[in-house]
Length: 450
Image 1 (spheres, one colour):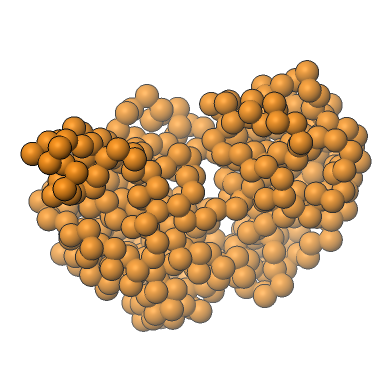
Image 2 (image 1 turned 45 degrees about the vertical axis):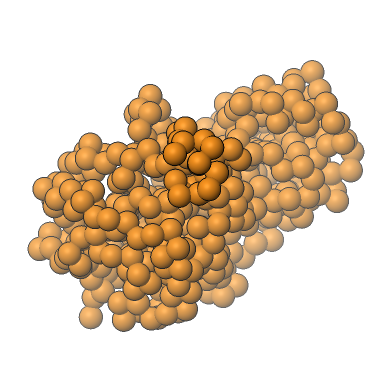
């Protein structure tokens, strides 16, 4: 029996006649996703706007409960293990990665009410009833009431961020990725079971016309996508674009061998599919030796179906994997390749996307070419180059003892996050900003006195 993912509207689940087929990486049918029209989107947003949020304490308790349910409960008749398997088989992520992500999402959702407080200005209070407002205080308030999310499908972990909006009292509408709608569907089901009303958080699978209705009818929004999506929304103050990470590592000095485990884990950890996985490694001394060592370690990774417990690399339909490999080959013209073929046919219509390591003569724009599998560009860097080649990075892990360089990296607006020393670029923890604090976008401080 085919699994049907209903839209989750403000009056409960809604099964539409128009549905999109979801297939496994082999092409075998896996599920159907209900698609709602723009008028349904508009009516849902109106219902969210009219809904009254839970109190702050009720929201905190519901988020803790939702995290536990998301990780451990059978939801919509689907056990956690069944969820792991279908995400793995449809999105092509190694099942161990999905399982780990399930726990990480649960942990971050359960702590969302605490994480948002990290962004609150020290001089502002959260409730106007706070005694400090009698003498005058900053008051932390929402910039709107309804928050919309066009979500990503590259990794379940992207869904650990937007629940922070629920913690702040927003009502939230999520448009799931067609590549992987299972995670937001399961999470929203858990949130509703934990105490959030149907008109507090909705799942709205829809087409491009529905997206226009979604983004046009909300107060604030967050969109995931490539450079084209960022370009479309970058001048809209009501939209927070989440584009490519172009995450990097900087290696200075001669003691790079002890850092090799962190470097390769940053590249290939969690399947190498995230915006926080390393795209480029810039090396002060002997980049060729570093590239060869990276290739040697990554070349030992196995090529297995995604549901295999030992799988560590992503899998895509053979045609999709071939297209990705061609794109990489076109961009890598003139670079030295240190590994063999990227596409490894599994013989069932799917293919493993194996790691790619390319050595560049200089850090040109190819160092920002980000792909949804372990693919890294290694290039030389000198002190005279400064921070310019390191800009446009969501995360930068720097192996350096130069305090002046660290100061320069932290002062550079084009570097969102800096990890100093042996911390993988994909390290994320509750309370730490991702691309700044989401709450900094959702909230503002007003003066209040009573």
